[in-house]
Length: 224
Image (cartoon, rainbow, N blue to C red; front, top):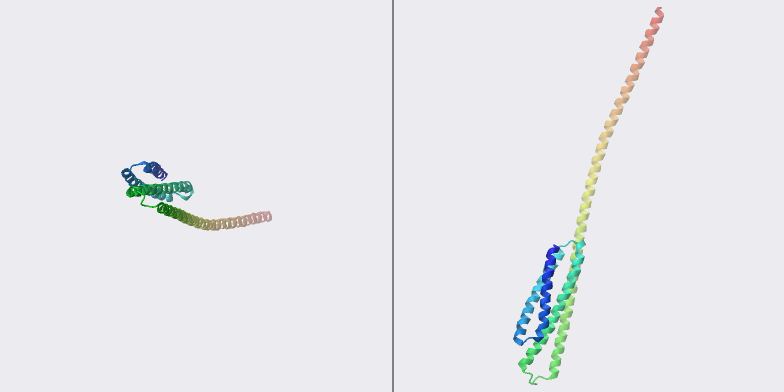
């Protein structure tokens, strides 16, 4: 499981490094190359998101006692992904400004106030987008915590069920032991009873023998 996660980590690191390099190159490229580079970065960002989803699935299958370290790494990767998307959006805003200026030809037909207003609206839109992304990340983190809590609860229920089965088996063994002890006690009682009966019989026979001997001696003495 961890080997699959580490493989995804390596792919994610290589991919994000390429994306970072390309985002930095966008402002310095000619218009045609910029357009192609923007499309390429968009595709790689989607691939990075898919890698994050695969990594997230791998983390959810890791046992809770070992999941903490991987969850922290996932949060770091998601923050890095959010930063890449923000940098890319800023790069695209600069790129769209340049394209618009090229289309207008910078001939002075657009007023400076309109340009300032457009930039402010774009900055406001970017701030709202970042807020939405932060809210989405918080919701996702809350969902992950809920999933982990549910999994821990299920494991606790399973452990309690196992403990209950162990207790029931122990009770059954105790009942069997009590039954065996009862049988042994009855056997010992019977043996003691027979021993006592045998001893009583021996005493009676000894008394009869002594009486017989005494009577024989008495008859012999009288004859003489």
